[in-house]
Every structure is written in structure tokens, then in C-alpha cells.
Length: 246
Length: 391
Image 1 (cartoon, rainbow over the protein chains, first blue to last red):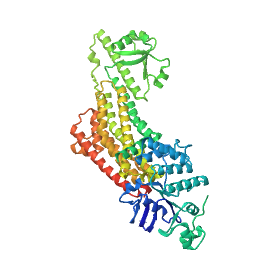
Image 2: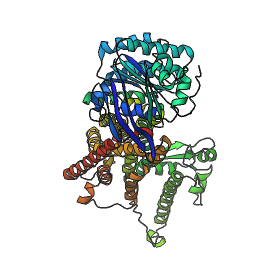
Image 3: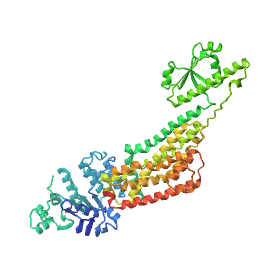
Image 4: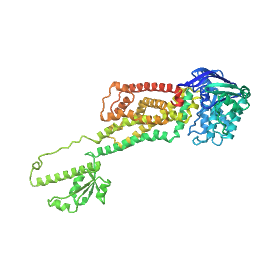
């Protein structure tokens, strides 16, 4: 369960978030959408404890992201904006490193990694060093290390950006599977079709503010349009959402 | 918490063990200084063994032409070896330093009281050649004087008549002293290596990690930022320690190989001393890695970090370089200055001068305090938001 109350964040003169409120309940996929530069990544970075808000408060399962940083970190699995790998470590070593940092070890950790290899279809490269991995392989490793400790809450920053259709669909299946287990998933994207396809609830951000918040149907009703694309164009003040590239 | 520090430490050590550059800096670079010094030392030791009193080896062509000369050389403890087939070429190629040629007919001219000719072939472009030719000429001069004195006394002439002046040569510059001078190069080489050993790791684990984009996900794990920093710090310290140990062992082996037992300064370099030096220098390693981690953290990019950290090892080596040419008497306050105190202590050790326990204690504790400060500063820097995104 993720709750955001009145978060503001500025970088010098630039106001990135101008007081946003929303929540992402358990058992649902919440999509955060907005044009480039709307503040999606900044909002996620505050939620996954990498940035501190100037004002306002965010909680994960009731724990404050600033006051109880470590408690929050134990409860989240994140595919962040930057998701670099260590070129000299194998995919398995990446996942194992993160599992250990979450206090896992021994047979429990190893069998969890084996499960992830099956789910994410990584068997082909799991014991290869990361130097030279394709974008899709890198994304899978990033996903595996976010999932290894089986947290309750997931935050995914553009999880399918740069993936081909098959890989994107596999990622979507995985996200729905997590939702069906009762987990809380918050992901951000600027790809409207993706948000429409897997979100139970949508939060639209524009210029650092939440301009709409609801289920896809609610948003359609609010704006009086049938096409979600038109919903976004109207809500974001005419700013164009980039077309889906699949 | 400490187990997380260890997990980060173990990952960085393993990751960098797979990197040729890290290994090169930790295991190969440290050997270069000792090898260079070893070569210079063996030359100095060679000069020391060529002192009077040691047996001189002289290549002689046509020894059979002068039994008198053969007898003289033998009496003066000179080891005579046959001259090479082409003496000039051999000397030019430095396979021998100098060759004495006694031509046929020498004996006839010698016994008839005429001036007999000998030839000395040498190569003045080489220092060992000059030393060898001086020794050969000295021998020939001595032989000349001996024959002259014998002939004069046979004719009843007082020898002092022909020798109004006598020169006694006393050369105090010995190879042993030259070796001592070369040993003064040990402290700056050592300090340079100490500041070099972990440099690559400090960069790779901080600015490298940021530039690869792996720092952001790493810091989302439930580990305090200072814990992540400390794990990386300890990994860089480990590689520094490996580099320092590798160099100490290299010094031991190479000095052991080139120095004859009578060079007392060097024989002090034993295993106990290696361990002692290592422990004495450990606080300075902690300072060095602290500085490296801070620089790698505050610089905006890997390239920028590389520029500063590439130059860094030279700066602490400067005091040692200056002390080679302008030695100072160690004073109490100097021992509280990191880098300087270690340079002085190393200097005392290699000279075989006594090292005061109090000096070592002051040096170690002051450096530990400075390194603790640096670690605290580095931990603070890790808390900053722009750690991940540069400035």
C-alpha cells in the first residue's frame, strides 16, 4: 500500500512536484502517466527513498519514506530509472547480491533465484557475465533483482521501455500475476496503451501536479471522451503523449 | 548491518579480481619500483665488490709472452682469464670490460732492458669500463714501478731519487654508501605505491558505479548508506594492502638477491620487519583510501575522478623525494603529520637507524584519527542526494 500526501520537490528554481496526492492500494496495478518531464520519475524516486521531499509525506505500508527509510526499503522491489549492471558479474551473481543485501542466503536464496530464472526465462544467460547483454536481458536481470526478496510493493519506472512485443507482454503477464497475489504495483510510463492495458487505476501527472486519478472508466467519464488518448491530451493541457512504439 | 558491509566488501573484491586493471595496479605496478631499485643496487654492489682487497678478474691476451707479468698478477690476487678472440669487438660489446694485450717479443725487449709495449683495450663510454681500465692501469703502473725499483737497486741507485712525490689514494666513496643513497628512494616509491594500490577500486566502486547506473538500484536495498560506503572503502583498502604487501615482499626478495651480506643496511630487511612496516603503514593506507573515496564521490564523472586520482599518488611522494636530497633530523611534531611521519619512519628503517616506539605510536594514532575523519566525511557525502546523479 503506497500513500502520497502533498509532496513537493524543487531542483533550484525548477518545481518538479508541486504538491501531489494519490494512493496505490494492494491487489491493484496503479499506472502513473504523464508527458516527459511531468515529474513521474521524481515522484517514484521519492517513494523508493532515493530522494527526500521538500514538503509532504509518503508512506509504504504505513512507514514514512524519510523517517523509516530502511523499513520502507525492505518492503519494496524497484526497477529504477537507472538500472545499470556490473559487467564482470554474471546475471545470477547480480540477483544473489541483492538477495543477500535483503538478508537472504543459502538454499532459500538459491532456489528463489532458480524460480526467477524460470519465470523471467533467463536460463540462457543466467551464468554469463553481464558485459554484452542485450537490452532485454539487462531488463530481466533488473527485474529479477527487484523481485528476489518477494516484497509486498513494487515500483517500476518504464518497465518495458525498449523491449520488443514479446518481452513487453511477458512483463505485463508478470505484473498481473503479482497483482493477483495481492501485491501493490506502481509503475510509471509515458506509453498510454501500456498503462491502459494493465492498469486498474491511473494517476495522470502534468507539470508536477496530479490532474486526474481514477479507473480508466472513471477517467473517460470525467473527460467525456471514449479514447484514452484523448483523455490524456485533454488532461495534460494539450501536451502530446508519445505514440506507442510496439 | 555489519553483514551487509561484508556483503558489499566481498562483492567489490570479487568483481575487481576479474578486472585486469585492478589486478595490474595491485600486483604488478608494486613490483616496478623494487625491480628498478634492485638493478641500481646491483650495480652499486658490483662497485663495492670491485674494491681493493677483492679479487680482480682481468682478461689478458698473450700472457705466455711475459712470465714476469703473470707472476706479478698472480701475486696481486688478480684472476687472469684468456682474452676473447676479437678483443676490440668484445670490449665494444661489453662482454668484457677491459683487455690487456701482451704482444709477442715482449719478453725479449723486457729482458734486454728496453721499453716493452702493452696494450689496454677499454670502452670509455661505460662506467664499469672506466673503473676496470683504472684498475688495469694501476696494476701496470705498479708492475712498472716494481721493475724500475729492482733495476735501480741492481745498479745501486736509491729509488727515492726518482720518486720525489708519493701519492696515497684513499677513496671513501664506496659502493656501500651508494647503496645507502639508493635506499633513500625506498620511502617515496613506497608512499607512491601505497596511494596507487586502491585508486582504481575507489573510482570503480563510486564514480564508476554511478556512471554505469548501478548505484541507484544498489542504494534502494535496505542497507544504511554509510554501510555501503564502508564496504567499498574496505574493498579499496584490501587492494591497497595487497599492493603494499606485494611491494614489501618484492623489496625483500630483490634486496636479498642483490645485496651481499656485508651490506648491513639491507640485511635488516627481514620478515619481522616486513610485518612491522606493514602494520606501521596500515593507518596511512586508511588515510589514502579515505582521500580516494572522497575524491571519487565528489567528482562529477569517472573521467574527472581519473584525472585527480591519477595525479594523487605523486603528491604524497614529494616529501620523500625532497628528503633524498635534503635529509632532515626527525622531530617529535613531524610524527603527528600523516605521510610525512611514515616517510621519516621508513627512512630510518632502510638506513638501519633506530626507530623510536613513541614515534611509531604517534604516527599510527594520528593517521588513524585522520582516516576516521575522512571516513565520516565520506559517509556524509554518501547521504547526499546528488551522490547518485552527479552534481
